[in-house]
Length: 211
Image (cartoon, rainbow, N blue to C red; front, side, top):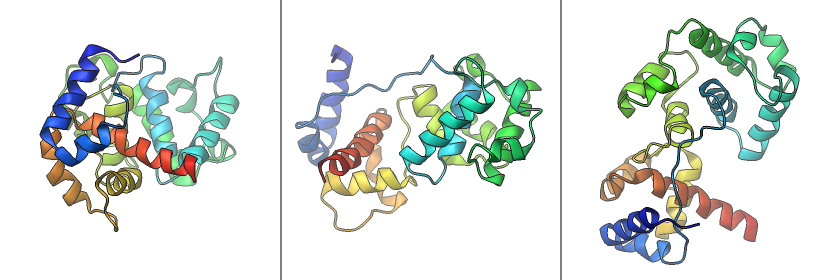
């Protein structure tokens, strides 16, 4: 279902960037929305697992983690906080990621980082600064939380390989763009850069499915 505000965002982006507009003419409008179906901890765990992995591999490992370590389809920070790294590694999680997930669980249990309600009142930069204090969580992981958990509208994860590939496809580049190149052009798309990020990922998915 395409809502009126989604059409308005699409029209705005088409007016701001002619080349992007040509691509958007061929694609349906898409929505960036907050995900209330999973907890902040579960979203963080999924993002940590996804670091430097394909979507399919990350999903497989995350589902195994939920099955083995969770209850009723969810994983709780209270349970993970007292786990050993070995128990997470048995689910296919790397040593470093296992330690990061456990550290994140402990930070949440100890209320050392803001909860979702608090984050909803915070600026994007403050959320990134807060999350990246946890060892093993970098800017990319925090940006995934901003887009896919909190539904923030103006995020552009320019270091993401999928974003770079999608950008190249949309703008007809023969080589992979640099993060600086993407961020420079993304000024045209503010305050709706997250929408363009979704289109970049979708462009890669479209090519993979059609090949």
